[in-house]
Amino acid sequence: MKKTGYLFMAALFALLVGGCATPYPMGMVYTEVKAPVAAGEGAMSYSKTGVAKATSVLGLVATGDCSIKAAASNGNIKTIKYVDYDAKNILGVYGEYTTTVYGD
Image (cartoon, rainbow, N blue to C red; front, side, top):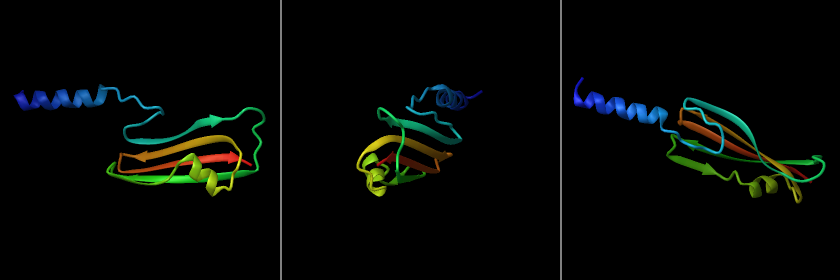
């Protein structure tokens, strides 16, 4: 095997096993996860829901505001009870990130 072949194999191996630690589960080909962000104390009852989204294209351009503040504002929520986070990513080509706030 030529020197370039060894370099290619080493780079591929490093890519596949070089742990990329993320706070949420992430698939190389496809990711679709729902994860909690925060929860308040007491009963988990709520009367309103607010959603905020951001998108990413090719991992090069990302737009949107998926902050907790934006989601609470979109749902006209003054008291936040808990927050969920959803992520969907397809081959790093298209990503959609959603924050959902529940409260009153």
